[in-house]
Image (cartoon, rainbow, N blue to C red; front, side, top):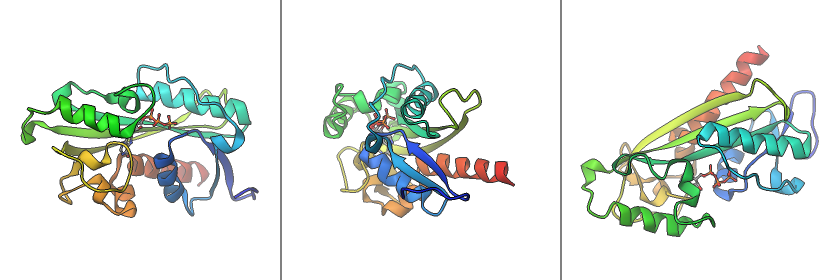
Length: 206
Ligand code: ITT
């Protein structure tokens, strides 16, 4: 994964989240994209100062494109819980503090929903993916996906990352952390956004 051909497009993945990077690696396999992680190119993490998923995704993609000169792909994503008026939303990774501690985030979420009955524990993951051809690209490609579910009373499963252990996937009656990675990628907010992005590329090339 270090050289480009006429048929491949070398891009930088503007994420420092190991869980996302694992999923992107699978989602981009065979797509014609050859990717490099931003940490491998010593790109510093961007400050996520936006108030929307799309702003933050653009900030991250632009930061990576500026530092590398490569086209960049970024994901801003999060969990919206209806009983919490959409929280933690864009602050999902920082819900329990700036360190991005998945375990602490889950504990805080379960405490906030302690007395909320199952029927009112509806939630969804959202994912915004932004692709910038270069740092000053005035027409970024922007695709999104959502994944509906419920918040469980306690964590289940060891797969995935983030809030997956407490996200009930109704069609499978298990948590997202209990799903095989391949199935999660077929169903998830990130899988949907990535499928849309790859279709947009195919359309642009044909
Ligand atoms: P990068 O900005 O470096 O990509 P990040 O973790 O800070 O990493 P975000 O700001 O987009 O990324 O926050 C996304 C958070 O939302 C993530 O840390 C999880 O807590 C949660 N999240 C997003 N997608 C998820 C998924 O598929 N499964 C579980 N939790 C997810």
